[in-house]
Image 1 (tube, rainbow, N blue to C red):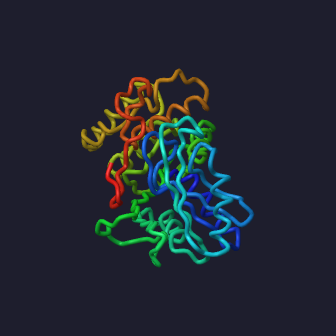
Image 2 (cartoon, one colour; image 1 turned 60 degrees about the vertical axis):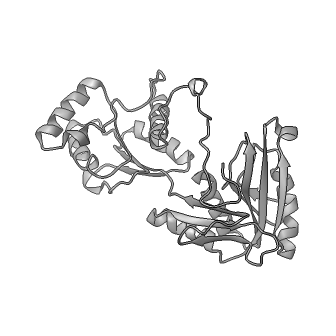
Image 3 (cartoon, rainbow, N blue to C red; image 1 turned 135 degrees about the horizontal axis):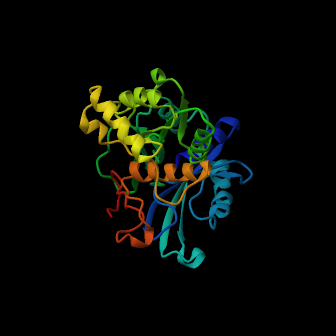
Length: 308
């Protein structure tokens, strides 16, 4: 589920008293707009945060959830999207009452801070007193009607540079719900992880060298450098001469961004963000019409009653 929506759910939960309802897409078949693990937070009065479709069933789910909020009894509902949205698919949604404090929301808040993935189990057996969503330490044994997923931290985007073109990159990253940090001092660059990207765009040769020496050995999932190829060559020569390992330097993506004809700062930012997204998701950035495999990779739950 996109972190932009998860952050909105966290904010909505923190700002309201509750009780709430949490709707989780637990099963799907065929082609669907959203996939298992997508969630909605429903407030009393049918206001909701998050999406389980392109917009055709959310109000119905929110209305249905009001009874769950009032009586506390979980519910399940199924939707054949072929008749509603011309999608060749079907989904099943589990709705449960949610009150404060809630372990799931608190776990998501901790995940944002420490960037350690959490495993979440949604037991949607209505007759089971333990039905509902909880955080678990280890994958469960295989149980019918139980959806388990690992929630990874959001993409973290480190921008090294403080010129105006960095603002556009930061804006688009934040719009996507990424954790965005702008750094102007190489000494403040954090250690990365596989879901962390760093775009070096200080427009200062010496500062870029210092930053790249640190970032290229920092475990980042993506490292990009703004600027022309000739400048990249000079930087790489300097880095290798100063002891950087060639295998680390070879990971540098420069000029950063996809080839979409960018000229303005905003267009360049769009190209850079698109390359970061493709790289971290293991895609190549080609047109979707050229893709032979399904657009969305099927994510098999850690344990569930159906294996796809």
